[in-house]
Length: 280
Image (cartoon, rainbow, N blue to C red; front, top):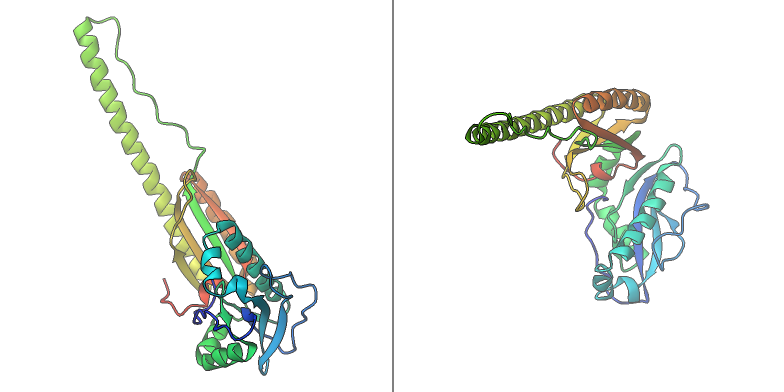
């Protein structure tokens, strides 16, 4: 999540560090009212001028929580990290929802020793920042996740042969039938998976034509969950939102017919498109 600025571990020169949520491009100073409270133990998010039409959204966070080695210990607490990530994203999404703005999200736990140090660092990366702003301006991120359908019928159980034959004949017939049925079930499963993969790939290619950019993401799954066939993110011009959603619904129906479930998520700030990565 977020643009590739250096991740700073603040030098302890005061009791606090400056936490950076995002960079905002807007003609006027974005309002800091009705903004979510921000990361745990931090001050209310504030807007700081960076350059004409560019603003930083920051909080002050205590070093006895966010400085080394305290943060290292906190990172082992997955519930705390999850709460911090949700709070971080809520602030970013609040500013991204404002009209006539472009928001560049920062990585979780991007911090500096002071406001001045944050301004200096971001200004030093101005060329890269401008490229990102140009790429994502007027766009929003959408995602798809394609998985094998859990509603597929179970494989047909192997038969047991004819019981009216002699015992030896019944045993041989049953064995052949069992092995044949197992092979047929494996072949059917392979065919279903191939159809699902083909459908997921077709969905990615079709949606990529509407988007300004598209990236396949590393497919991850939690233990006990249905592993994804495809996870992808799309940078979609706001003007193409309706067309993108209509096409996604059509492709979801096609995937369902092929034995796959396709879920559409979004819109989000352009989390997956602020890095300088090669296009897929």
